Length: 374
Ligand SMILES: *Cc1c(COP(=O)(O)O)cnc(C)c1O
Image 1: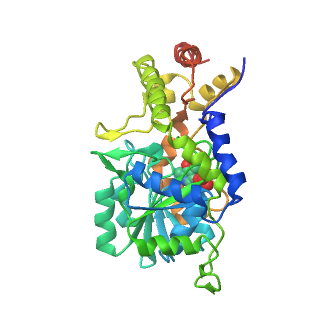
Image 2: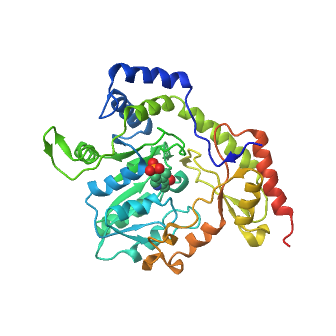
Image 3: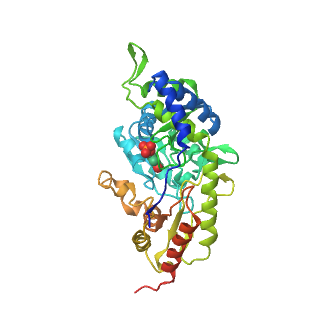
């Protein structure tokens, strides 16, 4: 049987992409703010319901540039429960990450714990909308306003996510998206920053293009992080189909939910009712005591059957060698994140996941639950 991975990238019909590629061959503009770049920027701003957006070659460079653009220094409060790029972006800017525990329900940075982590060196908060689940943006903003901190959201999972009909990307000083192949919407590799005024947009554009303000003027030590025309063309083609893809994902998620009901020790992660989910992941939590198997045993059993689920997010970022010596990285400081990291498993979720495969995955999980330990 062919292996099933946690995700399988959505692709537009090949002919649609080829048609756009032919235009690149005619214009010979391959990168540097070509026509597809400018078109995608407009279309995405409209689609996402945001005023200003700057496209990037990938999400990690977008995070690094976002921190540069706001001149963040010193210490930044962040979550250990994320993809490692979140904290790496701080490290690349010479900023000290300060890990703060997560909320056991939302799995996002717990606002109630942020204040205790603030020091005179703190300049910003870097939360993540994990699985696209919106952070408690009002509570976080209140703290930021009280202490004069910036807020940068890692919104890598949050493409198209709305709360109460409002894009979640409009909160904080900047929000950073990823359009990597594994995400709900992809431009092969890619990313973007959502900002709120034209001055910041100009600054971001300069920083992603070596700091050039014009042909002969360099105003800042910028980097090269521009999106090229092949990525932008892919983005344009993908955008035509993304709603349908999300709808298909939502059907798969709903089916899992129906079938995984009432299993002791297996909890399906849930979004609040007022959120329009993009179904980027399908996380479940395995409580070994009640379920009868550990998460890792379940993971291995699925793997032995050709089902490659992923432990997003395990290990915690704070456990990687670069960060584990930090005071804030101690597991005692992060009890909730440490527990969740031992329980979480993301099941395969993609638009083309077939019912037959889904039944097989559910069957394996149920068989695990019903087999006594020993
Ligand atoms: C994917 C991801 C990134 C990095 O994005 P790339 O486009 O792969 O560089 C950053 N943060 C989170 C939470 C992610 O999931």
